[in-house]
Image (cartoon, one colour):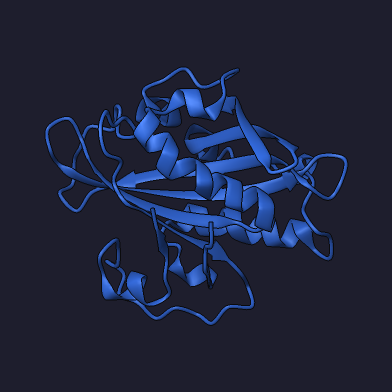
Length: 206
């Protein structure tokens, strides 16, 4: 799939911005930063929102396996994550929409920022923002992905359980690669799916 690039300023969560900046600093002049360079910020509580996945690639086939997931991530996925293929942690419709974005992160070896508009069990609108960060193992290919998941709602309180579960049609997924060479994005703080600021750059819709 084709995913366009954007500046880091498109990312809204302060913690996710910090994770992306740390990724670029760790990469330095290499193709990818090593997974050994990644340390969650315990003081900021990053680990609760992180999902660590292993990547195996055979030709064009890419398989992503969950290795470890934070408590809040498990609630949003409403699934046991560790030790399972990512595909099996998602309903088929959501997997069909999400996995091409994860695969694009592996191929491009750049961070990916995604926005998914969903609703909780009571119908409250919720936005899920994810940052996917590719890391190398012993070589120059993406052997790991660290995913940060952040859910928020303009309505205030919401139920996070099962936000990533859909039985029928998956909601649209917006995605961009984060490239430090891209021009900065000027957008209001409340920008989100459907806003002019997001659509300008934009974003592949699945």
